[in-house]
Image 1 (cartoon, helix red, strand yellow):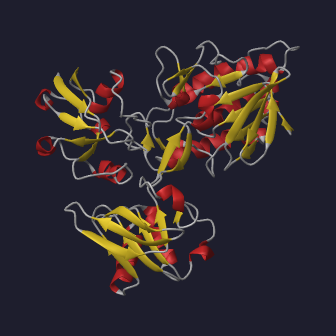
Image 2 (cartoon, chains in turn yellow, blue; image 1 turned 60 degrees about the vertical axis):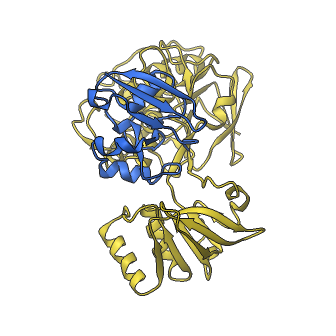
Image 3 (cartoon, chains in turn brown, orange; image 1 turned 180 degrees about the horizontal axis):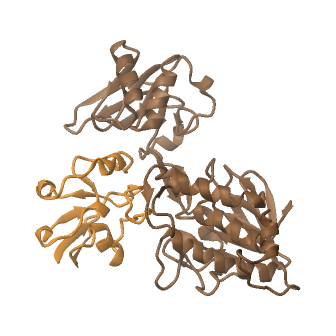
Amino acid sequence: MIKTDVIIIGAGPVGLFAIHQLGIKGLKAVVIDNLDKPGGQCIELYPDKPIYDIPAVPECTGKELTDRLLEQIKPFKTKFYLNERVEEVKTKDNSWSIKTNNNNEFIAPNIIIAGGVGSFEPRKLSLKDADKFEGKSIFYSIKNKDDFKNKNICIFGGGDSALDWALELSKSSKITLIHRRKDFRGTQHTLAEIRKLEKQGKIKIKTPFQLDNIEGNEKIQSITIKDESGKSEKIKTDIILSFFGLVMKLGPIAEWGLNMDKKNISVNPNNFETNKKGIFAVGDICTYPGKLKLILSGFHEVALASVECFKRARPNEKYKFEFTTSSKTIKDRLGKK
Amino acid sequence: MAKITYTDQQGNSKTLDVENGLSVMEGAIQNDVPGIDADCGGSMACATCHVYVEEKWLDKLPKAEEGEVDMIDMAFEPKKNSRLSCQIIVTDELDGLKVTTPEKQS
């Protein structure tokens, strides 16, 4: 059981800035995120796309914004729990207790939900039988590549993950790369490598094809792929690897008894508290009259929420508003002289 | 202003007057048309506003840029007439446009 002042759910830009706003007020926080790295949508969806509306930063990419925020919160030495999803929230003596799918337990008077549009999960194949084979013959990610040796592997997708794994696994398995159109997304270098291996007969490429059927009982025996004209082809297959990017799922948050407006959590715009005392929602996931889904709005929201968090975490202390330019206490907390 | 018709896989359809300058996605979201999620809010980063455009309209729409086609790779059951509705900006010329929403978005 880990005790802290605030549990932050979501390590996107707003979750990261929450650490800063809490930290300068002397509050301790932990961060939980389902992804394997901090940055949220900025890092997962548009690491290389420039953002032009961060105040005083004329232009920066999603990756740069994340790196700068991480730099800014360094003094607070906050612990990140990555690859973890919050499964359960319970009230406990005027506090909240949280359990993750990794069996970590946290307790704090405050929870800040900075969950964006939900947690990222692999986009799954839509065929009915796909569920049945998941984890046995169908995989959406690779943990140990040794499990994929000496097999007939069909890889679906046209992006970096599909191409990189096709290259890597072609060293020890028969690879068929299947994509819905002729063009692939990927670096010139990777594409050239793939084409080279295709010429050498080490990788088969099937375009423009999509998955139409899976044959097999316990294990997959073969798959049928089909093109737009209806032409189909059967391929002997042991394993399907599918790389169609990530989708965002709200997940268990929807069942916590919070007032929701469609997929968003309704909050009080004075302090961004939800209908549950001590649970706050900030950034893209919250909604209130006039809400704009901008990173800069999230920064404002978390600044206000952190004040209310302070009042709940330090009920016997009086909250004192301070500027970073003049407060000695804040400078100490930031490690500045 | 253009009349845009949104039809789902069950055949239920809704025809709306959508203001010029809005995207076909925004027209749907502002009027509670089901079947378009638009998780990323229109930044061409998620493919959950994917629609099938009626064939005869395909050539009349400005061509999809590379980023859009790349995102459609990720969409649920993409077809030749697949587009991201956040990238179709409404003009008078689009009056009568018909789009069908896929069975699901993710």
